[in-house]
Each structure stands twice: as C-alpha cells, then as structure tokens.
Amino acid sequence: MAYASRGLNKAERNYCITEKELLAAVFFIQYFRQYLLGRHFIVRTDHQALVWLFSLKEPNGKIARWIEILSPYDFAIEYRPGRKQPHCDALSRCETPRDCTCSEVDMSEPLKCGPCQKCRRRAEVMVLQEKGCNTATPPNEQCNAEQIEDCLARAIDTAKAGTSTDEDIADEPPERSKHDASVRDWLHINSPEAVAEKQKLDVDIAPIFVAIENNRKPTSEEMVTKSPTTRHYWVLWDNLRLCDGVLFKYFEKNNGTGEFYQLVVPREMKQDILQQMHDSVLSGHLGTKKTKAKILQGYYWYNLKEDVVLYIRGCDVCGADKVPQRKPKAPMGHLSSGAPWDTLAIDYIGPLPKTARGNKYILVMTDHFTKYVEVVAVPNQEAEDCAMWIINHFVARWGTPLSIHTDQGRTFESHVFKELCKVLEVRKSRCSARHPRGNGQTERFNRTLIKMIKAYLAGEQEDWDRYLGCITGAYRATPNESTKLSPNLMCIGREIRLPADLVYRHQPANKQEPSACEHVSAIRERMQKAHDVARQYLELNAKRSKADTMPTRLTTDTKPAM
Image 1 (cartoon, rainbow, N blue to C red):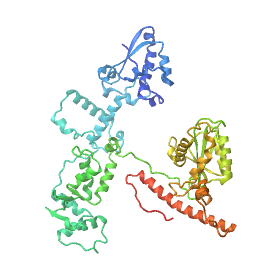
Image 2: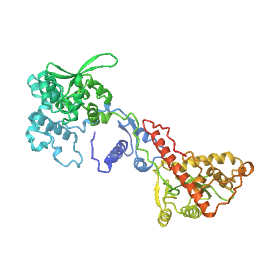
Image 3: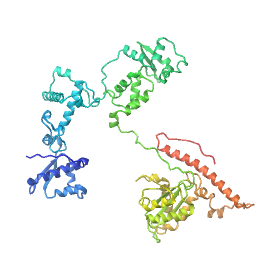
Image 4: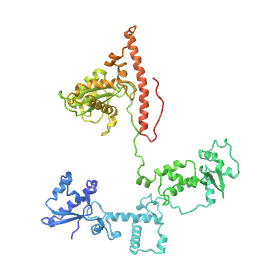
C-alpha cells in the first residue's frame, strides 16, 4: 500500500472537475509506473464521468494527450460512490488538528493538509464569540494563539465525548441554524409600556401620539412644517386608536372578513420586524407581496412597501436561491433616423442556386428612414467587390449615407471595408454577434424578398438574378407598414407610373404646364410633408415595438394626421 499527493498549480485550479480527476489519474499512474507497467490493474474513482471519458472515440485537446500518455498501461476504470470508499478521503484528513501546523507553513508545497486551516478558522470564530470581540477587527489582533488552541481542544473533546455538561451548555453561545446565522435573535418581548415609550421618542410618531392623548387633532397649518411620515399619520387620524397606551391603526377589510389593529411601528423597530417576518423559520423567506401582506396583518408604517422591497433585495439567501420569475431583458434599443440616408443597413442573402452569370448571393442595401431598397446580384462576398458595389450602385445614385449598419460578417469587419468607411467619412455600426434582430430592417426585407422570389420565379432556378430589379421595384412602389407611405414617394417625391396605370387609369391632362421652379417647389413640399408624416408613424411604431417587450403593453389609438 502506498500513498501520494500533490497540490494544483494556478493553471490547473482553473480546470473543470472532470479534468482535475483525469489529471489525478494521469499523474499518479505515472508516479507509480514502476509497479504498474506490464500488469493489469484497476483504477477506482468516485467521479463517474471518467468511465465515459475513456470510452470517447475521438477525444481532442489535452484530454487526447492525457489518454495517449496512459495508452501503454493495461487498466480498467471502475466507478465507486464516495460513501463506499471513505478510506481514500481519510488519507487527506488530519487526525489531530490542534497539533497540526500546516496553516503556518507554505501551502503551495505538496503533502499539506488543507482542512486543518478551516478548523483553525472555526476555532478563531469560537474564541471571538466567547470573548465578545468585535468581528470587524482581525482575529490575530484580539486573541492570542493559546486561546485559540484551548478553544479548539475543548471543541474536539466535546465532540468525542458526545455529551455536554450543564456548565458547558451554559458557557456556549446560543445555537443558530446556518440559514439564520445573520439574523438577530427575537427572544425578547416588548411590553406595552416599552413600545409606547418608543413611539413617544420617535420624531415622526410623537406629534400624532401626543395629539391623540390630548384628543385634539392638529390643524393643517401645524402640519406644514412636519415630515411626510407625520402628515401621513395625520391623514389617517380617524383610524388611529390608543389601546393600553400604545398607538394602533384600525383596519377593516372591504370584504368584511375581519377587523384588525395594526401596531404603528416606530423607526427603531422596523428592522426587527422585517427580520422576523422574512428571515425566521416561520417566515420562510417569502417574496415581496407575501411578506408585505404578512406584516400588514399586525403592523403598519409609512412607506412599508418600499422598505420591504429594499430589505428583500438585500437578502443574501433570496438572492442565491431564487431565480427571477420573469426572464430579465435589457431595455429595447432602436436605430432612430430622421431623414433619408441617415442610416444604410447592408446584408447578404445566400448562397442561392448559381445562375448562368455566376451569381450566388444578393447584396441588400436598405435605408432606415425611407425603407428604400437597392439589391445587387453578386457572385461572391469578397470585401473588395462589396466596396465597389456599394460605390457604384448606391453612393453614385443617392450620395454618401451618414452611417452604415451591418452584422459582424467577415466582409463587413475586414480592413478594406473599414477603409471605405474612413474615406467616405461614414460612421460604422454593427449588431451583436448571433443576434440578427439587431439588423432587423434588412432581415425583414430579406424574408419578403425570398417569398417574392419563390412566388414568381419558382421555375427559374438559374435565372433569378435577371428579375430582381422588377421584384424590388414592386416593393418600392408599395406603402410600407411603418411609414404608411411608399419608398418611391419618400425618395423621389412621387409615385412611379406602372403599366396598369397606363392601361386602366387615365389621368386628366393638365390645363397649364407648371414651370421648372414650380415643379421643384411642389416636389419639395410634397416630400417634406411625406417625411413629416413618416416621422410620426415611425415614432409611434417604435413605441409600439418597445411596448411588446415590456410587461405592460402600451396601447394607443392616436394616429398622426395626414
């Protein structure tokens, strides 16, 4: 029988538990290799994942390297629960903690038993409790080593004996459960005289208490200089009662199920009541609503709900054990724009069936304000070609946008694209990784475009790029759901003339042809009006979209005037 151990270095302490268990097996099999090579042996472990780990068909990383190191050995892995092999854990336990000095030496060395340091810390806490020391001061400055050792020895002797004398019980501090260790004991009961005295000494309750004793309600002028709490109790004057010299608030339920007298709690007693009604065993660490309802059965004070909320938010037990009932969400952001070409959103669709012209992708460029769309059938997603297509198909027609918004594709994060934005003096923004909703305007059009391609080009799998212009023109001539106006009207100030207009709708001829200046003024006025209406609808749509993500839905019937 042999025994060996070693500590973990800084990097190994970051391993997961399975990697640590495998590291132990690799190290100690190599450590005892003189006895293990050339013979079959069994490795018993209380970590069942090791059995599965050695059955992997294609391990990788350091696990593969470690398994390769163990390949010369003939062994089998057996799982045994920890409760059935306590002899292994006993090897790392110290039999006489009071005689162990491992906490005073360098713990980075091997063969040092760490548990004794925890025992020493418990002894320090026990000494502090007995001596009544302030726990905020380091233990070494208050109690010497002899006191700590004596306390530790007494604790060990008591545990071995299994019983305690009456004197020992009298000397020991009150026993506390691990969940209520931070809760102050609720062992004393305040007499009516003591509670009444605290109410009289409370600066907020005292004026009302004295007035009720004298049976004279203060005037509103007298309440002007008082605190909000005193004014609140003054408003409740008709419901306040003095019983045995203690101030209560009379409360009767609307459904007639009972009448209650709620103690008007002075400021000094609020924390004690909150601890007793939330942290004690008979309170159960309930939530805000139930804790508040329980307190209101017998107590009352101003701003009770806010105090309950703050207390429960600061409760460590509730914060560690309770998960949020509603999945937390960050406030919804919105890409706001107020004029054409403020924000240009760019994205790729594809790969699609390759056409005879070699095109496999669709480059989509969408203006956030007007919803105007430009699409280009392209053969690849190279950054150099993308920059050329943006220049030729958008900047040459509509000018330079103020900002470009994309996802985190390698094309848009390349050095070439960054240089393009730098040359054009365009601000570059991007959405979060794996979050396509951050570029929702383009993603929504992508879905619409795919549907239109499926509807009209079902039999043209190899010629879809020849009809993209017509399909996009149909989208630009249709009013958008957000702006209620068509992208054509928003961009060029008029609706385009469709073939159906020439066939079925005959416009009356203008009696007088407008001059060039009149035509420009009319177009400008029409576009300005369209932009004003679009801004109102976009703002309303943004509020509606944000309300969909909030707990309470925002509803409104307001519509901008046309």
